[in-house]
Image (cartoon, rainbow, N blue to C red; front, side, top):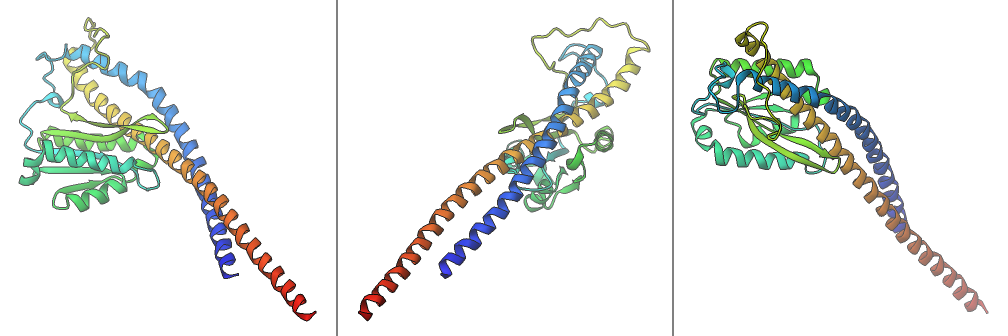
Length: 294
């Protein structure tokens, strides 16, 4: 009977776990829908703003952009931004980012790491914990609150701080590593140079419109629009990462819920077999005792 009690306890525990994973799946599905709607609504504006920046600064590769955020210099001082989740239970969402950071640092910034000129910004608790373990000797800043809601005001403050560091030459290059939302079951790793500003078109086949009438003059517009474009680009990247996180968590919790259901079925079948064996043994004992009394 002790075996039956153990199985009953396991079934009860798994059922409780299934309720938790099912609830987490529904919460992540709701958050995924909200963030995905925000991301879809943002994309046309973000793409159009980048197109306007291209039109103001000239075609890619030209010397037209003399803005400080377009400054090209030797990458001696590097800032790497890593966006992860605050919590786990989202499959390999964070682990694939950790592998990408290790690859980027070893292949691109090994010299800066050795010299101590590599700094990090961790957006998300999991990324901060990883960076502290892996690169504890480097300067690491933590922004956990942004991962929760991805509010534009919070991202704008972070973008302002990053631009100030680049403008004051605290960093020669800013590198961004995060996940991008593809669908609920898969994410794409984004690993790119965030600053200096890239003057590559979003769609290479689409023509870049450069014939604008400027009011006020072109230089003032560039000074006003490029910082806004940088903040919006950072916001879009982190919003994309937040959407990918909830997609990954929803998928992971869906699989966990299904696995819990299969485990409950297996344990129930095992419980019924043991119970049937115990009942059969008792019947045989009673029958044997009755036969012995004859």
